[in-house]
Length: 125
Length: 332
Image 1 (tube, rainbow over the protein chains, first blue to last red):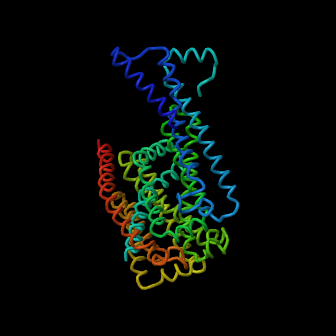
Image 2: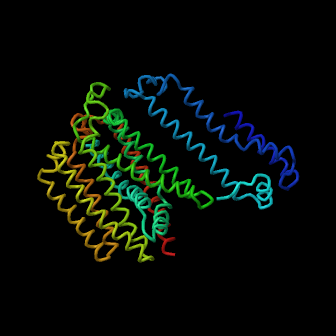
Image 3: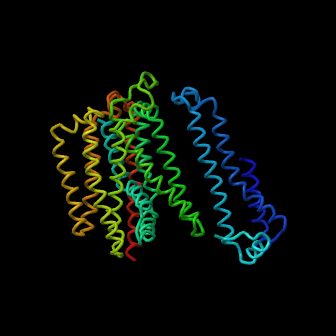
């Protein structure tokens, strides 16, 4: 989380510095490459941040007061809701990726679209 | 005293949830049931009516749960353990519904994929309120007994009863009626659609009345304390008001006085919930947990009320402002 945040901050400073120097939108090849690499970092930072708070707290559910073991419901067969929720969220993740891809294919400039259609003739429903 | 006050806030919040969130569920149901030559336009009108503020309506359900959790922790724990299965089902319904709506709304192309989201949304709109009604019903059956943290009556006892199932169906019909009645006002610029929703509202009301009778009859065996609550001295008074609003709603719909019908429907739903709460009072989980014996320490309750007051100062004006903005846009 800290690494991802620092990396994004560093790239932001890089952009600011170039803008301050040239007063133009940056077109430096390496900077643009770095920006592409930054795209997933936000997601990674959020997810790993949750890992830190949730895993770092164990074995306490309320730090120093109640253990996770004491807080869990006495309901038997918890593997069923666990599996169900895991499947639901996996499904949602797949759908989000599919939809983002669709959104991207719809909105990209026309010349790229033509190219992709030529390369892989996937019909648009 | 403090705990009763908080319980009253919970009831008010539940009523607002039914009036605003409930209508969204009903909208989803009518979207799935849309039929005839105007089905597409019906669906479109429903989406337009729901879209602006629908996620905000879950605020009221969250408030009820948070208040239950912080003010009545023992009752909360008992409910979450004994009703694990229906509450999980409800949660899954809420997740699927929210995702399906957003996927549908912001998807870029209109095609078969988008129609599939509508189906998921519609099915979840039936599924979720059914389990909400069923859960509320299960609390009053008197079948939830705990020793320590163990449910001695099993994880199926309370909610697989005819009474609880009837409560689930009742919630469905209530929300369907509410949504159809609201829609008659929202579609005032399209008379043919308005008439579709008018007929749907009338039919939903008839089904609702039948289900109300079934709930009452099954409560005699299924929820004895609720039944005795519904037959005490104040009950005819409240029943009278409920019946009056129900009849007003149906007559107003028949004579196309749609604004009056909407007010009557709001009154009817509020009276139903107030009646249900009074019949159950002071129990949270019949018969072991009451508002008094499940309450958190007084210092907690005081802080909670302060937080509620502060929250209301921020929440209520912003909500009114939000509603006003969308109403103004509608008129334009």
